[in-house]
Length: 389
Ligand SMILES: *Cc1c(COP(=O)(O)O)cnc(C)c1O
View (tube, rainbow, N blue to C red):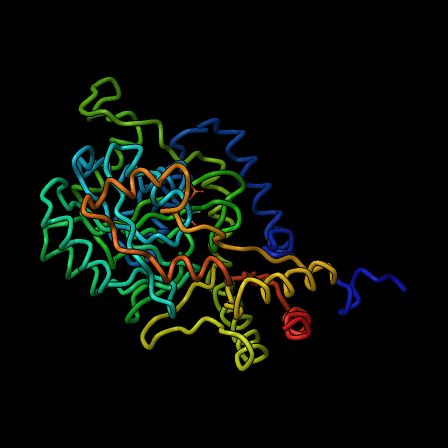
């Protein structure tokens, strides 16, 4: 008997892009073939088409395709003129790109602690650090980058209100969360601008690098279009501002177009898998809790173990059973060699500690999560986790 499809030994991917590809392979091949025919590899009609679909799906008035999630963050910050002398507040527990962008623009990232329950930015800590920066008067508070970590929307109404009160730009790093919603509204309209990543493993992924910026603001959208093409004006050889080469290419747009019809169902399948995990593990480990009114996109499924030793046991047991797992993230950003100096610079009097971010790094563990997990797959993973506690 072949073992490959037996439920007990079928390989379980951490992210599964092959199962999805099998469903849409014909559309992908046809989409790429069309581009080989028309030859508009850059800014082709596929880019316009996916921008319209992203706006429609998210409810945002404008969608601007760009070359990656990182470039989406960068272009959005460049459009605000954020740079030297500016403080940009962002969580210490996130992917490196969130902090890299303000630093690359000469601004200073100010790391903020996260809430233990949601893994997202802690508003009380944000207010405290904002007050410290404002009091020192060395840096101008300019922006908050809220991250919807693992797919769960941050508390956008509160972040946006705080930003409005202090004249700051609210930027949503929704790289892990496309499809997530808050108060019945999909991410894309909760902040002044929303950055998406189409890195292959994200909830909507292409077959290379890609991203988009969503906004309701027509002036911002126009600036984003200019900045992604070297700051061009109405004509191609009029340069209005310093921009970059940050475009989404036609082939990646065609991949996204082929995947869009699956997205709604895939989000439901992720939600179902999260439900199975929660039911199987919820009374033994800390599983993600989705607050009232929020909907997670379930980009990544992360549990909390008691401590590092227990996490190591679970990881070892999973590895022995041939099951993948990952640690997002093993180190808070303020401890990263590249960012430690900026962290020290942000609040001269000495930044308060970031205990929750530090603690989560010692005991978080992410389990396989994708729309093509069966209930038996989740059961197998959960059984191995439980056996190692
Ligand atoms: C993936 C990711 C990014 C960067 O996206 P790329 O497309 O890889 O540049 C930024 N922020 C977060 C939180 C991410 O997970």
